[in-house]
Length: 150
Image (tube, rainbow, N blue to C red; front, side):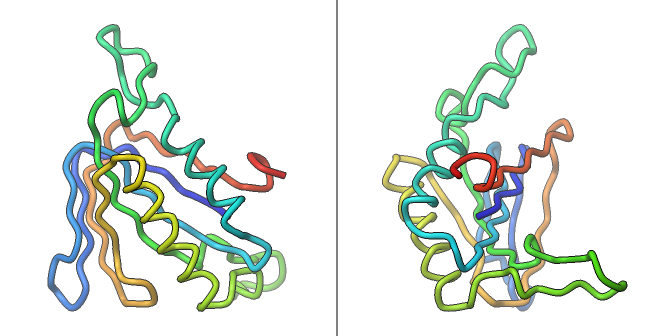
């Protein structure tokens, strides 16, 4: 499982020119799922995500978590996080999880983040989405279960 995490001042996602998810200060999280992922891996990734201290404290140091700043989540599915560009110039996506499994784990991530008490907006799995954001920093982190969990 891979999360690309961007600290944002605001972010939104649209499908067919209609905003379906929108947040203020918080984290925009792109979620990629591999076939080897499961709920146990998702739980560990969500735990790491929710505890990341990447928000500024009063001294300007990145010491605060999303809970500390009462931030929000915008969660977007993105199978392209598993693009394999080693051969040729056209990426292969064979490492990405099959759609049914990927959607199940994507929905699970949203539910678990909400169970932790966070406000979470989200995109629409498999849809053509347009994501807009005002990055705060910019500050972008990549969380990979191969490094975090395994």
